[in-house]
Length: 119
Image (cartoon, rainbow, N blue to C red):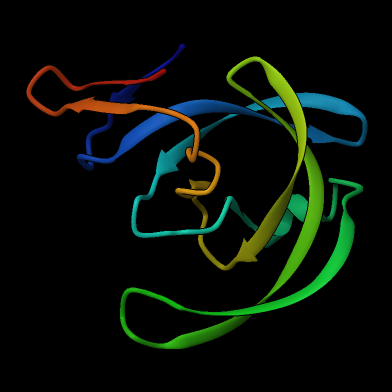
């Protein structure tokens, strides 16, 4: 089970480990149910990631604008399991976990108690 919190911006956040230069680094990631990809990370993390460039993806963001971003294959540890996943880059400072990474999980958010858990 993964435990997280609802942060000061009312965003559900959980820990995620990214494998960067063969080392595990822990980050806090926002659960974004409006993002149907796997993972979105700031461009700056890719430079140190040693991830494999897989191409480009075009998608629509919340404003209705279409963006074209680089997609990489990279290793992460999520829910105690290491896996290789698609990672899209963005200009945001946030790491976003999308619904595809949650496809076999149950997501529970209690905004009143400011708690998040994923089973």
